[in-house]
Picture 1 (cartoon, rainbow, N blue to C red):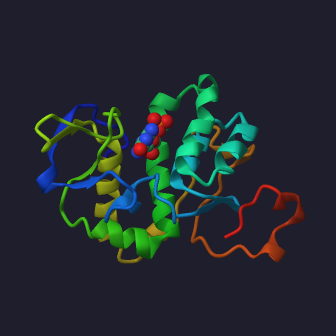
Picture 2 (picture 1 turned 90 degrees about the vertical axis):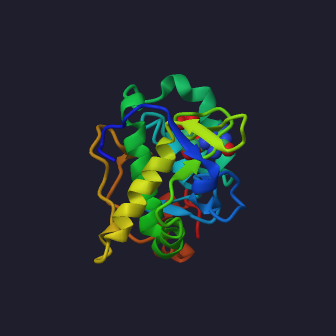
Length: 216
Ligand SMILES: Nc1nc(O)c(N)c(N[C@@H]2O[C@H](COP(=O)(O)O)[C@@H](O)[C@H]2O)n1
């Protein structure tokens, strides 16, 4: 996928696709709503890729970012941003797919084996995020029960990442450079390059950051 997104509705056949719907299902880990894929950005633990994505809406509201990232439930993290949506970064419509691509890359870099295995297990199949009403990120089931229709941007970003992973013999995807967009910040600081998750030992947490960190 180029850095520009091709906005058009696509049709997918359920029987030929990997449909990501419930997080407890076999491919549920591909969803941003899946638990078990904690991330670390600038030294701060972010419980889910959903929380990371939602926090990126609000670079100018570090307290809202903190509230979003404090939620262990990805759905609650999404909801915490809702009352502040009028203060979403002004270029969000143009950058949100790039932010999502970056979030997925971070998830892979920091869960290279587990998330990578899941991605590769989809083989050559279309990956489709099933949604009830969001035909931008996902695709909506039609009445025939077999067809899903939507732009499926999330599914397409996952397929793009899967193809990159197939060629990642030197494991370059374990590293993610910062996204080249203005004001790409967390808690007022520029987001730094991302590498492996590592572990965060309570005794090693600088005191001034301790309150905001969720420890692994
Ligand atoms: N409301 C809701 N319920 C679900 O079960 C979902 N999977 C999603 N979709 C996810 O929401 C994120 C996009 O959020 P915005 O609508 O752009 O704020 C993205 O991670 C979708 O996968 N939403």
